[in-house]
Image (cartoon, rainbow, N blue to C red; front, top):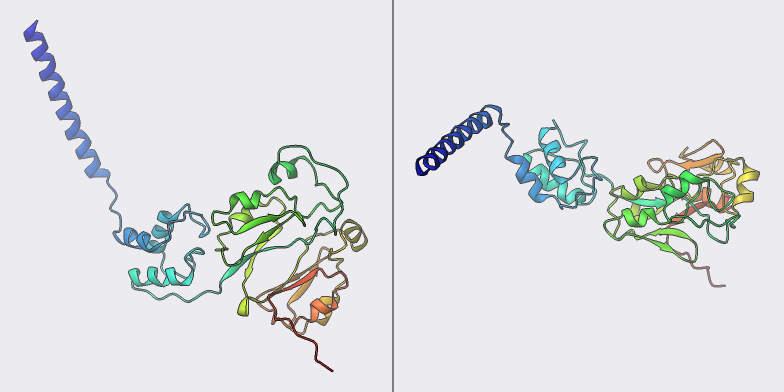
Length: 279
């Protein structure tokens, strides 16, 4: 009996040792050498793992940076230009600074501007709601108001305004990671250039219905009249599918379109308030 136990232990020990040798040989043969610079790049990244860079996470982004011929197509929206300069320092290359971006809510369908036509009593999710029907109002393009964007933001940069029923972006907290853009099933949220001194002009509407239909659904809807495009001296505005769009790379912030818009669908943000001259 004792001898059987001893032989059993010996056989198991030998098998264990053989398997360990086999595993070691296989591991050595098929191991993949990883560039040590990946660890160095990952150390300077913010570690948010938000996916705003287009990669699965910070580790994947670090690997992408190391393997890319240049950093022109690489950008960490959370860390911004400061982090990209550190990445460039690790890799011994140069990287051009990029203009900071911010999330913009392109819907002005407040409770006042866009009256409800029915009530939704289902699960409070914009994605679920969008899959079931067009929404609570006559506009089938606007914000659904369930706050999927708020839940998607890891930085607390978005909140729902109970007075308007629309999301509000805190530009000081927004990192332009794009999580809110992906979360919105109506594509209401867009990443745009922050602009000079944080000033920007954009069309706060994406309603593609014809003017009369859009205006009936929302008092502040773009009606596709094209007046803004005609008055723009920089050809920054196009009108397609009954809705205007301002190209922020061409816009010079002259605000002529803002004054021309008959429905106040074009918003000018962070411009200084000009006080009337005293008589």
